[in-house]
View 1 (cartoon, rainbow, N blue to C red):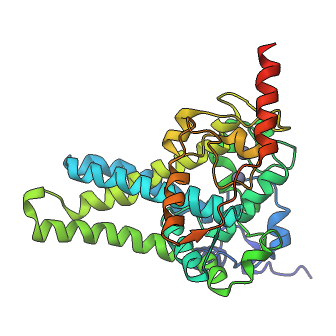
View 2 (cartoon, rainbow, N blue to C red):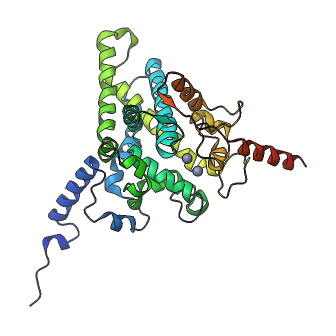
View 3 (cartoon, protein in one colour):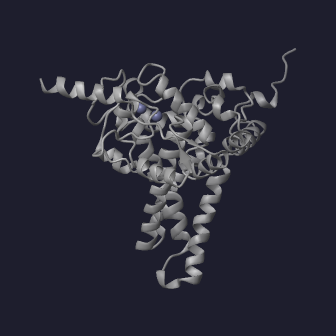
Length: 333
Ligand SMILES: [Zn+2]
Ligand SMILES: [Zn+2]
């Protein structure tokens, strides 16, 4: 006698939809929740995970809300300032500290760095560091998760970040960071700080509207410009290093990848545009190797070292400068 199909076997049954919805909510809350198992997720084909990408899509769509609020120069200024504040957190904390450990700091400070970095809404510090370390290990080979050479420009820019298999944090790559439970907790619950940021933007606008009405600022303007538009611009500014910085610009060093140096990208990312330098020597706290290579993140880190917040900023070794000199002379011949 043929068996009756179970409720879950039907593709659009109420049971399946309800379960998918609760899995989605739980994964937003806990990024380490993988009911199928991490290995199954990692083995999936490169395809967009709509459930987990929904906040990213909603944030982009919400940019259209700028047409519902009036223009205000104060708000625009706050949005630009918030962009650069969080860009510094991505470059100096997520990238140069958590991914490369190019300087040292205290345990409380590293937690604060992870919280501030999380305000950029680019997931947790440990996830960010694990995917970035993978990029350096496989830069522009066939295993690189965001290589324009192998997967095309758009995949290297935003495709990879939406893909099923790139959501789990690979804790084996970040054992040095995973031993701190407070960092693991923050990484798992990486949705919490972004929600606070959005609410905080609205609330700061409400405070200005209530107590300094002459500025003409509203809660809605601040939520849309600082919470949404500034964040989306910040995402793409960061993602340009994965995409454009492997396509556009000059190459000082003959690295095996396609990394490039670009002043334009260095300006919008506070110093990350010197990407060919960085791929040649990733352990240095500075990425602009010379005084004329503008690297705002490094200058701020230097100031933080004078205050004792960070220390042991790793320098560029003399052998790397010698190599650059040799390549420059060869180029003149
Ligand atoms: Zn790269
Ligand atoms: Zn790096």
